[in-house]
Length: 252
Ligand code: PEP
Image (cartoon, rainbow, N blue to C red; front, side):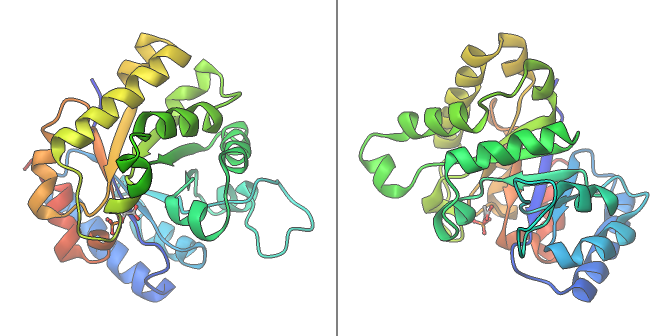
């Protein structure tokens, strides 16, 4: 049985003090409303310590939005997994389409980060998804298959319990356009079968696959009703309690 897993990616929004204040109110609301899914939030690097402190004891997971593919050394501006773990952050989002598009992250770079995070015992949310041109060009499966095979190269079967995959069609991120629940379910089914052929049916069956792309209160229920949709990675609608709480309580 896969437990629903809903994550909020704050991107480059909310200062440490704004983030801590919001995280504290989210933690309180999560306790009071009896949320029964796993909740994760991913603030900016500088907000992480304050947010970790603010959600202590609430069960909310705090994740980084990215990390370096080296443990330490002369990598100006980068943040190591050791630094994240030292402040109590054990989960990281990798391969977000904005990292791929604006910062030149290739599948190979993302794979090196995935392997490093796993070797440090961290959990990973690996983002995959096609652009509009790729979808219109009939390349959806080719793109997803490559991103998964290269992104997970060298990952042992025993490490797969630390991997969540987020399917985020690039054309649906921040645009207000959402994949239909059927589109999302179809892509998730393909991702699940790809992971099944790389590993095993059992690993595929237990794999949590989140959908991301303009998720909001009005569409979460329909998305979550689909067999292969196990959660969501939410951007814009994760930035305020008013927008995020109805998403994480979709089932209440
Ligand atoms: C995201 O960035 O992961 C995302 C899905 O953004 P939005 O929900 O704003 O489309």
